[in-house]
Amino acid sequence: MKIAVVGTGYVGLVTGTCFAETGNQVICVDIDAAKVARLKQGELPIYEPGLDVLFHRNIEEDRLKFTTSLVEGIKDAEVIFLALPTPPGENGSADLKYILGVAKDLGPLLENYAVIVDKSTVPVGTAEKVRAAIAANAKVDFDVVSNPEFLREGVAVEDFMKPDRVVIGTSSETAKKVMEKLYAPLVRQGNPVIFMDERSAEMTKYAANSFLALKITFMNEIANLCEKVGADVDDIRRGIGTDSRIGKRFLFAGIGYGGSCFPKDVQALAKTSQEYDYDFRMLNSVMAVNDDQKKKLLPIVRKHFDGNLKGKKIAVWGLAFKPHTDDIREAPALENIVALLEEGATVLAYDPEAMENTKRLISNVTYTHSAYDALDKADALMIFTEWPQFRTPDFAKMAELMNDKVIFDGRNLYELKQIREHGFLYYSIGRETQNLRELINIY
Ligand SMILES: NC(=O)c1ccc[n+]([C@@H]2O[C@H](COP(=O)([O-])OP(=O)(O)OC[C@H]3O[C@@H](n4cnc5c(N)ncnc54)[C@H](O)[C@@H]3O)[C@@H](O)[C@H]2O)c1
Ligand SMILES: O=c1ccn([C@@H]2O[C@H](COP(=O)(O)OP(=O)(O)O[C@H]3O[C@H](CO)[C@@H](O)[C@H](O)[C@H]3O)[C@@H](O)[C@H]2O)c(=O)[nH]1
Image 1 (cartoon, rainbow, N blue to C red):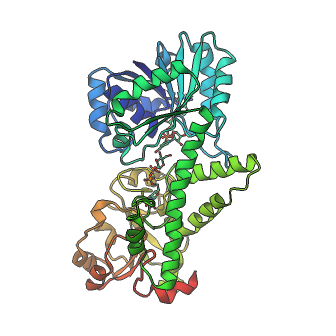
Image 2: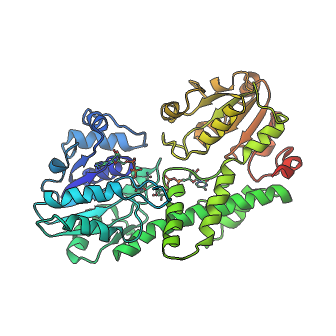
């Protein structure tokens, strides 16, 4: 099939590359000329495990191309994916200017029937708006389909190639057949392609992300309570996750959820609820708890240093919002680093992939070549991302490098027994950590 993908970010690039891998002819379109120039030279603008092999193979085998021209990109395309940004607008609802802008441009350019597929996360009713924007200037027949994407960054290729399910919102039999054919190679193991109407598909995406954000937030609140009552949230996680009705995944308490999706999508669903005069109280709690959770370690850090961070040297491990990505959008590390700097601390930071992106936002941090380099004479270590390489460090070496053996761990990486054996003062989330109970009253 001939496919165009408009918007070549995390979703567009993975979508385009994976559909090229299943034998389609794909052209990815982006307005960012510098990005397209890099892509044309075979350079990936993002770090996403497993993507490079597929990307290079499909370019070499002539199935994957890039352009800045919408006209060139959509010429003869049977399917046109919109993988454009939907950032929060001023009032918190998803800003549709990118989607509707491209939809308006598409109308006069369509020469044959095409299925326009909305892969971006968009509020209920958007497919109708896209259809109207295209129809205003279209000379040919077309269909608009909602096909929300559920990939996770860091495992995007695997999620895309083996989706738990594919959701397709359409009322057109023709579009349904086209989409069925396109996705057939990805669901050979029997994972379902679930058809529904456009509005339900749009809502499904927000329901999925909000539910996952809620699941994490529930565990974060259990963690906060564990600290008060003297219980261990990791034990609770094991205790409830084995109940198949609850499930083991997305139960890890920590320093709050970040990324380009959960924060904006929970907010956008809350906004939709407001617009439809429904008070979705849970969503407001999820947002408020998560805002607090991201700042949760700071009062403990302050207390540890008797309220004065001036001149303290803080090492930071992890900048990305999660491991296996270079994405720092809404990453908890960022606001914590800014607060530390504002209070007079010096920060040495290390992340395997996200330092370049962070440097563009925060310059007055020393970015180091390795995790251990960041520990040089540090008064404490703060951990924000659970990169595998942080999980089993050489504690003796850490102790030698650091000025003081103190760890504030936002991802619960270490066993309490293990860390105590090495003589560290250790603060983590929702566990009966050393000294933590004495500090609980500061919450
Ligand atoms: N990142 C994820 O993990 C993820 C997963 C599922 C769904 N989504 C949703 O998918 C959508 C895209 O997200 P993303 O993370 O890929 O965004 P992104 O910011 O990484 O990429 C968007 C791309 O669109 C390009 N663009 C903007 N205007 C354009 C135009 N007029 N024509 C062509 N290209 C244009 C930008 O230059 C950019 O390269 C969002 O709605 C997001 O919520 C994201
Ligand atoms: O048990 C957990 C699981 C995740 N997180 C945090 O939650 C955030 C999001 O993680 P994850 O969902 O793995 O990454 P995303 O790439 O943001 O993926 C989410 O957002 C995408 C964009 O909409 C969806 O496509 C995915 O299905 C959805 O999982 C990160 O900050 C994680 O640290 C936790 O704190 N505890």
